[in-house]
Structures are given as C-alpha cells and as structure tokens.
Length: 252
Image 1 (cartoon, rainbow, N blue to C red):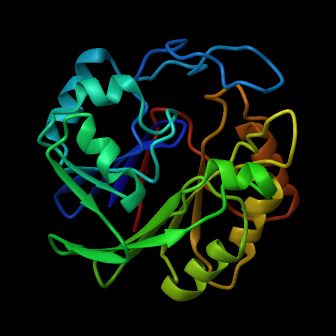
Image 2 (image 1 turned 60 degrees about the horizontal axis):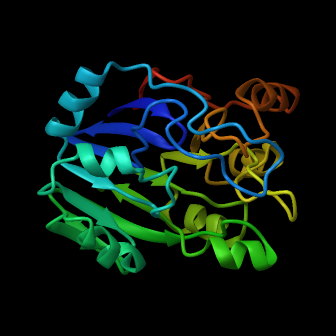
C-alpha cells in the first residue's frame, strides 16, 4: 500500500494492484476564484501540482476509480471533471450521485452504508464540516473506510473532530487515517476542517491509528500550515505524517 499526495485533499492510493484517486482538484494554480467571505482574496488553488500535465493525464487514464467525499470545488473541480474519462467508476455519497451523472459520468456508485468493490469493503462514515449554521450549510459530507480484512484505511473527509469521527475510529479501528486539517474558516464562525488540536485528538485516540494530515496551504481560507501542525505535534511529543505535495508515503 502506498499513496501519492498531490495537493489539498487530493491523493492517489495504490493498494493490491488497484488505484483510487481521492477528491481530485487538478486545475492549475489560480484557476478558481477565492472562497468568498474569508480573510483574503487569493485565488485558488494557491499552489501548482508537482506533476506535469502529461503525468496527470497519464495518471487519470490509469486509475480504477475516483472516490469523492463530497463535491465542493476543492475536491472535485472543473479540471478534474474534464480530464477524467466519463466511463471511470466514481464512488460517492448518495447526495452527489445525480450531480455526478449530470456531468456525464456513466459509472457512478453511491454508497449508502457499505459496498464490496473488488476484494475491498468500503464503508461510508459521517462528519461535520463545521459547527452551527455554517456546518449545516456545508453539509452533507462523508468519509470512507476501505478494508481488505487485514488492513483498513479511513479517509475522514472534510470534518472537524466530532462524535462522528470518534465513532468511526471506535468502530473500524483503522490502521491508517487521513484527516483534512488546515483549520479552514470563514470570517464568521469556527473552523470547518481540523485544527491542530483536532488532529491531536485523532492521534491520541485509543485506536492508535497512523495519522496522515492533508488539506493545508492550497486554499485561501486555510489558516493552519504544515509547519504549524508539525510544531504542535512535536510539542505534544506525538507522531503524524504531514506530507508535502508530490510526496510518496509507503504504508504497511
């Protein structure tokens, strides 16, 4: 099992000869408007992909499926929808099925609870993309736990630390967990993705999962940097994998 971290929440998971592309945002730097009602007007994404255009085109032709936690544009942008072949399997939450089909994709699998996909089981989990009215407006979002009966891989999605995440860790005891950090926020309200304190809650959870933190330094409303998170983890004397774009991570 290995993964290639591309940018934001986008990564390629290679596992038992299957390739899953997670939450693809594939457009060039500055290709999208800033997220509104935030502290700056920097265009998104704020950084380029480390792979060449040819490498990205080759990658999307070679994947077995795309897995979408939700369809906010930083997880499913116009460039990804244009580049990915329309007959690619797209795995998603039920609320996004018709939207994805309307974009021309012909093989869409919406997970209500769980599915069998090849020799894997994929379970859908819940999350909270913020608190109060903002959290309600940002909903729905999902996470997913992929398992081969020996190893399990939890993609928490865009969520803060909450009972939904705790319940998923308790139930599935994942070997590895990807969390979306960045402490993204609007001018009003609390963060809508994990803060450093939230990431530490996941690390400190009794499931003892191996935590990989993403979703930093790619969008104009993210306030937590990789360096900030690394310092917080070090001060707490904990471990967390915080990849840079373009990093490969080998997982046991």
